[in-house]
Length: 470
Image 1: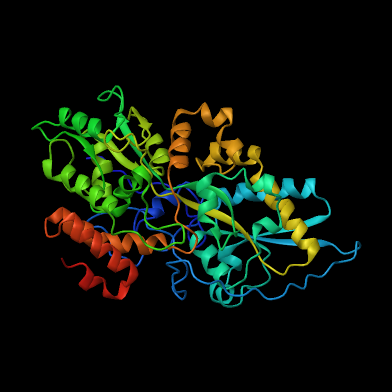
Image 2: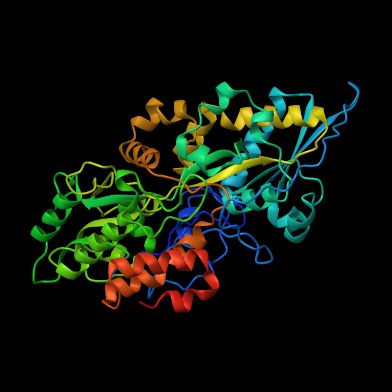
C-alpha cells in the first residue's frame, strides 16, 4: 500500500515561519515548501491518529499572546545619523530551510550590487538567533531586520521592539499588500510586519478520472460525494475529520470569523453552530464522506484511489506533484450551501520585521531591503520556485501566476481566506476548538454545547478540561 509522507515541510517555519505551508502536526508539512522556518510542535493535544502539520509557535519560554492587548509604550527614539564616510551595515536574519536560504543569499548578493553603499550581512537563525535574549531584550547580537512568523512578530511588537512598517515605506507601497497580509500584521492601527508570503489555506483536490467538474457549493459537494461512494470501500471525499482547521472555512462563510476586529474571540456564535452542524452531518450520513479519517489516512485514500476528492492544505500542492502516476487537479473550496458565500480558510504568513531605534542610515537601508524583497518580480520568482504565494497584489495578478492552473487557484483561494489579527495565536484557537469538535463528532456534545465550550476554552485555557464537558 502506497503511503505519502509529510513531504517537504518548509523548515522555514521552525521558529520564524516560511510559507506553504498550523495544526499541531500539519504546519510542519506546510512549511516544507521552503518558505517558512520549521515550526515547533504545538503543545495542543494532537488529532487522534493524525499527523497534520503543527502551527508555528514562539519559543516555549514565551507566553503566547492570545488577544489584542495594550501595547508596551515605545521609548523615545534617539536615532543617530552617521557621517557620509561611515559604512552602512545592515544585519538581516532569516530562519529558512536550506534551499530557500540559499536563494535568499542570491537575493542578498543582487541587492548589494544594486546598493553599493550598503553592506548587507545575512545570518541564519540557527547560528545567530538567541531566542531568550531576543525575546527579553529585543537586541540579540544586534539584528536589524528579521524574517519570522506571526507568533514572533506579536511577541516582539508587544514588548515594543519593532518599528512600524509605515514609518519606512510610503502608503502606495503598503496598499499593494493583499488583505490577509494587512490583517495579520496590524495592531493598534500600525502595520508591524511586511508579509513575505501567505498560505496554509485549505483547497479541494480531485482525481480527474473520477471528477470532471469540481462542485461549486457544499450541497453539490455532498451530492457528488455520495454518487462516488460504493460498497467496495470507495468514498467521494476524504478529509482530516478531527482537526478544527477543516471546520474554519465554513465558519467564515457569510461573514463570521474566529475573532472580532479587536482580536476578541467569537467562537460561541450561530455561525459556529451552523458550521459544526454541517460538519457533523457530513460524517454522520456517511453517504460520501469517509468516516472520521486522519490527515495521513485521507491523503493515502486519495493517492490510492479510494477517495475521489480530498480537502487538504496548500502544502499538498508540491507533495502531490511528486507523484507522477496521480492524475489530479485542484479547485477552490465550495461556497457555503446555496447562499454563495465564499469559504474562508485560515491564512498564515511569514513576515519581515524591523527593529526600532536604529540609526537613520540603517533605517533607510532596511527600507531599501523591504522594497527589494517586496518587489513583484522578486515575489513571482519565489512563487514559481517554492509555491510560496506572493503578498503583492500586482504579483498575484502576474501572468506567470495566472498561467499556472494550480498556483492560480491557490492564489484565488488565499485571497478569499482570512487571517487572525496580530496577537491572536492560531495554535491557541485550534486548541480551544479541538476537544469540543471531537465531542460533536463522537456524539457527546451538540453543536450548541460545543460552541460554548470552545469559547470558554479560548478565554480560560486552564479550564479546558472542564470546558470540554457539556
